[in-house]
View (spheres, rainbow, N blue to C red):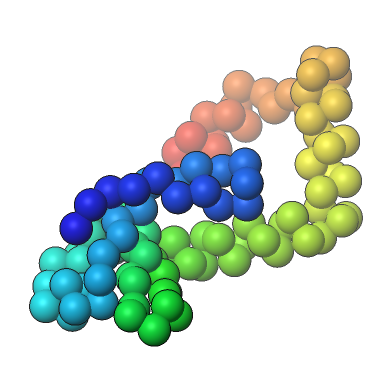
Length: 105
């Protein structure tokens, strides 16, 4: 087993465990715990060349939410508009009472 930086989408770097399917199978519980507890993805290499990735369900769901937002042009326009108002300092400013209510959640 070793940690290897893997390029994702040509702009994002991710540290990922890369190992053989035999080593993964022999230490299944340990690697599954790493994927869940440490949010560490794994690339499992097979002799056939058909590798696969293991990630926790929580991480997969988070990635799916991110992809949904990125594919939704309406949401992306809202994000861009919000960034513009934030940068100008003209966006919505909650009162201290509203901030206190949010922080109590």
